[in-house]
Length: 163
Length: 102
Image (cartoon, rainbow over all chains, first blue to last red; front, side, top):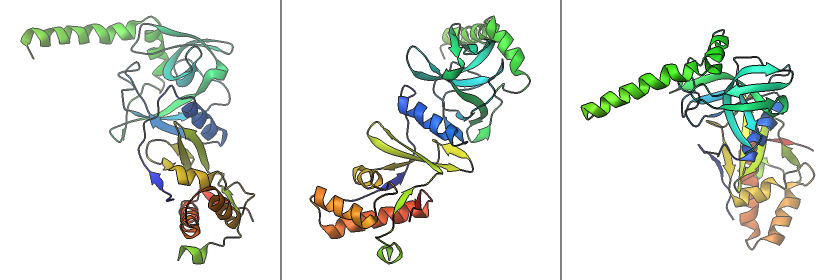
């Protein structure tokens, strides 16, 4: 036998129910939960590999806030923005997607993004007062189009130039 | 050295300032450092032997009882098991992941 307590960097799937359990357990102890984001559905505010700090809120969440929640159909942890709310139901959507996540009940929301770090520094995450405006743009897919079409145009130019 | 500072009749249990979960076969321990459970920079894992010891550190069994249980269960010399249990206990205490129950 030999024991080892090892400190390491470890990637845990966002599909892992244990990761969700770990976040809930940290929140139950009054702590914040810090982990690495995956994917680009919240780009440019949250990019792949950004480090997020999630805080539990005891009095619900507001439009514009970026929240970590469990998607009911697939039990996957997702971090997207609230674009509308009615009672304890939240309409949530990624800033860089056309599709909405649907109505998410309050009990599926684990917490809100309190901090975004990129390359070891705090990043502008659109979670300040500007979050309401971003939510409005996102609600009508204006935000997606604002970034999607110029990006496609630039990619086309690059292809034509043979870069 | 380790054996000298840890009393085998003492009973330990996981600290309130950690969260532990078994994920994909590994036992993961996340300490709450300054109120933050940090999956990015403060994540610890235990190997299989460590898991066997950890699950017995339940605030009910003394280290001596844990050692005896492991000796009965695993084909390894008692001295080796004792060294592992005391070594891990010391490491966990040093990182404030364990507290003494009695």
